[in-house]
Length: 144
Image (cartoon, rainbow, N blue to C red; front, side, top):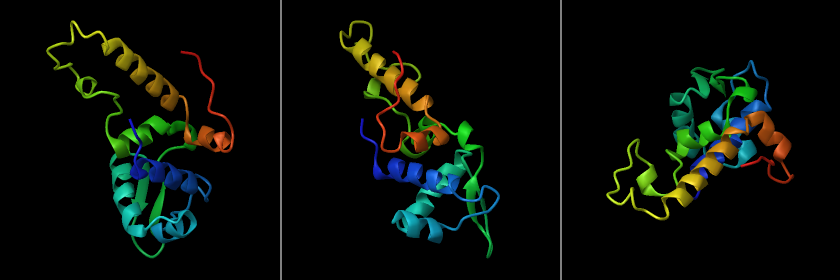
């Protein structure tokens, strides 16, 4: 599993918005300047984040974007799923019902299910607020 620039930039964008006045809308041009990400790419990302209910947008001269929820209620997992899609280590776990004909005899399935659980548990344990405290620190400790 590899997080693309879309997922990484989405997290940067949301953290940038978190640091701005929570009652004001912020233009993509401002975010682009601070984060060194093209406005065109930010437009693609904000579309996904808005559809996922993580951003609110408005048009006009004072338009832009702001967080749809408190930073304490936006999990990194939700950001990644909104921008990357389902986060599964192997294709057979990406479905509601595992379609693999070998699922009942697969000797490695437990490994991949365990990996998915660790990723899920870790990314759901971190909110936007938490992500700022992780800056330049070791990863969050949690028990498996």
